[in-house]
Image 1 (tube, rainbow, N blue to C red):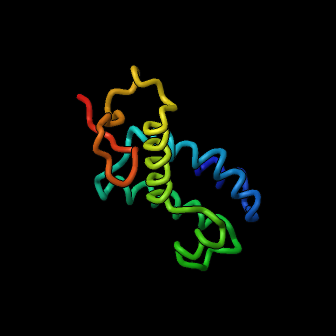
Image 2 (image 1 turned 135 degrees about the horizontal axis):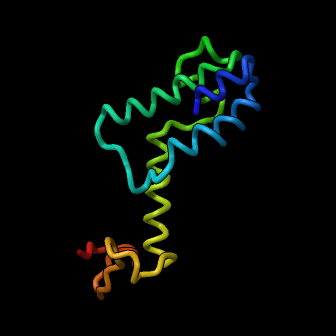
Length: 125
């Protein structure tokens, strides 16, 4: 997908890049990220390498380091995006947004002893 952008757009400004990147590349990098959460370092670095290469396409930030390019473009790292997606899914599970009959991994723990808050979970197998 990154090749489509490099072939068809030679000089990409920041706004055009963000629109193309979020529509074409990001959707593929984040596809089923909650289910397929890479845990091996080689997979994580391979995905980050795609984002590193993509951010070098913008001529205004080519000379900057990777972290500085992300800050300048306003793009979070893929690891941070995975963490946010995990937190959103946990919130949905705890707030009963999903149908409890279809999701069987975590369920709210019903107990009279809840210290601190009422969002305790237990694993159901």
